[in-house]
Image (cartoon, rainbow, N blue to C red; front, side, top):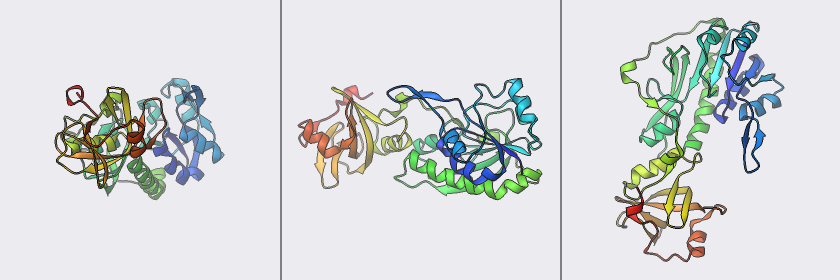
Length: 309
């Protein structure tokens, strides 16, 4: 088996590990500035590939003809793609005998696009999965080869669910690898009339509003934890929410009350128990430590509802 592996994020790491012996080349995004010092940082896939002793290339544009010819020269059975972050051209897909095979983090045709895991949680879905699919010129529109399904746990965050799906994807592609190399696999056309789009996440979407129901805002918190990070806007600045749980009802919107479960913030219907928070410019801390430091008392108005939208 001869594969080129295209991937960038942590979602793509487990599958790379499982396929390593059959990977001729790893392709990932270029190093990007990150952190306080804005130093160039390699992608998680590049870090893992170097650990495994695999050759790595980081083209700025994988569709460039020179790079396509480089891939064609490798005599590949297929391109295996997982959370790569660039659209692959038809010419690049055609550079391997069996084209490109993608590991997509949803049950297609639902949640085609850049953020399928976050969007599924945000929409309150109870089930998701990984679709192994044949790539074509569209955005996640190709024929489906296999689907692995899993229940979304009620308190599961994006980060936790992504890690689980990454392991499912790794098992899935490892099981199918010999047939993918031979071109011996089924293909089922997607029902495009049932398709939904999982747009790229904007940071502004992660802002919680006490004017909306607690259940929906808890799903919002889960969908955007750990990235880009759910937050509340307070008079003194933003308050990032690192850990939270659904809480009891009977608390006015924006009011913070101490309950047996912890510090509960009221929404228009229900509350969230704040567990770990991070005020702007400070470290993450237990909600109790934040409350004590800010001299907040049970029943105080933490968020002004009129300023929460």
